[in-house]
Image 1: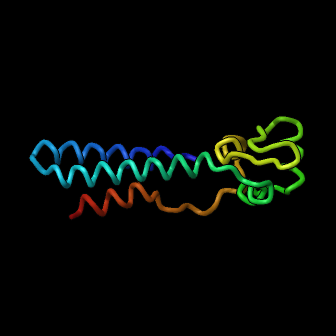
Image 2: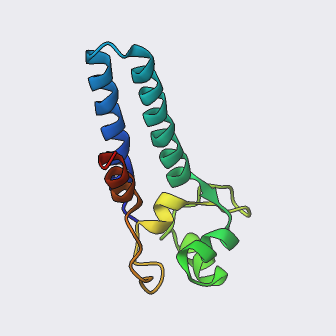
Image 3: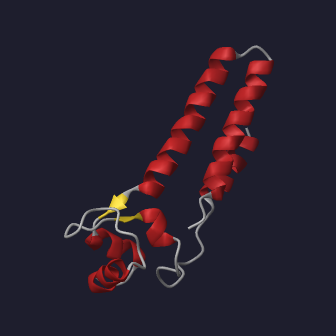
Length: 119
């Protein structure tokens, strides 16, 4: 999973906040900075979320027992406790592709920027 487009969008929002501040639009700059921080925090929270093995198997697109074996072998770090394993999404998705590629979907960051630029 490539989160770079979303992180780039947060950076762009910060750049826009800086530009707003330079022209004296401090309230708008503060709002943009808040939005950029919100986006960044949500991305980080999602990326670091600890999943139970049922949810991890669904997100990875493999069986529960396959995830369980990967945790038992140490191929996936256990973010939980012994007997109650949890897997961080970032550890889960940093490996091989989780499923067959899905049909091409639009890049949401590009779509938002395109809409913004046309205004």
